[in-house]
Length: 64
Image (cartoon, rainbow, N blue to C red; front, side, top):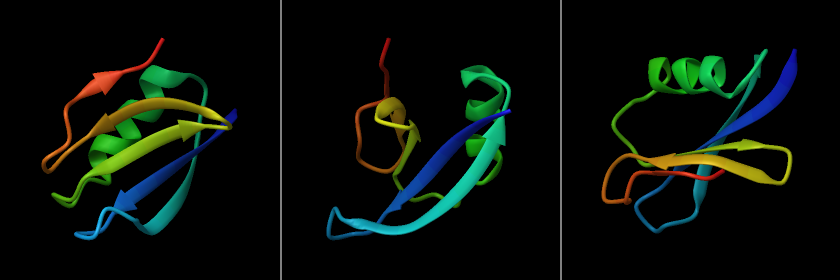
């Protein structure tokens, strides 16, 4: 299992909360992140690599 971090972005644009996730790969981590969504903008990271930014007011993108 790989360690991921799901950062919830507050209205001021700063990280308001973080959750640790464990998943075998990016696709599984994305599914977990979507299940944890509460309508706020979020960023999913694997160590120093941003996997995806999604949610309220953020352009949805997936980094290679």
